[in-house]
Length: 440
Length: 100
Image (cartoon, rainbow over all chains, first blue to last red):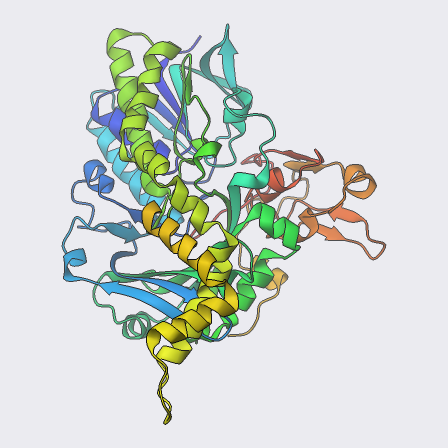
């Protein structure tokens, strides 16, 4: 048998790389295995990395040759119907001081950048010659002996470790092999994300979105964007391109019989979006499954003997209306899993009861606290009234309120009541409003 | 902006092992289930890479070459017709994102 690692990390996405950075800093010996040609080569997200954990991993991440596209300085939430867009818009100076509260990323670039920072940390660690980032290697299965995970099989090769940390993403085949999730997972708690990256001249982009330097704009859109399918759309500014896409509830898409790329084409033709992307060239089309943030989708147990599960493999994600959080959850869960490995290594006990400390840490962290606290908001967002009828109410109201006619003007409350009655019914709207207000 | 077809969109995706003739399939579909008992044939429209198509006779056909490994069919097929694996880095197909 070959020399054993303290930990094998499967997957060089944000969860895996965050764990790797934590292990390198603690001088542990680990092997990170990534199936892509480089870390990031297989990864897709919207995507905004929210929160401040990136600074914990790379304290000066905004300096030098940074891995993100732009920092978030201007946010907008838009309710759209076929002809109008009603937005809540917020731009603030406080966003402009690093560490930023959110950075816009393209994963093939960002993950590769983060992997380079991890390699730097390995190089100065006490285990510099015994820890590795291995790309282009596919893990076929976990090696299990007497119920304990002892390593992995990759082609003809086997690698052994005290524990395996699975950060394989939402298409979590190893998590299923381990029995943490059933072999078949139904479509109820996942969505299909489709996206285009559209190139714009940098000056045009900055003028069009009123940006300067590395500042960036994020826009989430509900309503007509998805042609009645549960979900929403987004527009994010990269350095010299836009990420324009949709997240479509998979079960609802299946029921409605629509093709995700057709819905994306319609979204791009809406005047609101068409004006943003005008003159741009599509550089890349991409798609990926994404969890919808229902806490019911998170497996009951995220550990076993010699086994830990982090990131979206554990369906850690939340969209409660404020932000679509997934990458920050991957980052924190990867860090917590690695800290658990470090603690286990000091006592030499990698049994399930000892590794259960990971789940406890995760439960106490913002990740599970927020997932539990905002479940009602998740359900409100996923109700047809919210994603389909509310945008029509607001746009009808907007057309009335923001239009000046040379005739007697209706009072705002009356025009809101009229718009609400037409699409929802007043009582249903009041109920939804109270529920939404409480849930946030 | 011009409306792009799905084949134009897939033309902007970088794939691995494109020159290889004997590339190995990473997804296996038992189309006898799709064409026999499946009530919705949903993969023919939910797949973002149009890997599942309907022939003129209305039968489901599958090709893995355009697959972008998104995982949609892994979840969307509730009939047990799809065996989903990741492509082998050397002998398989699959994506190589430039931007992601």
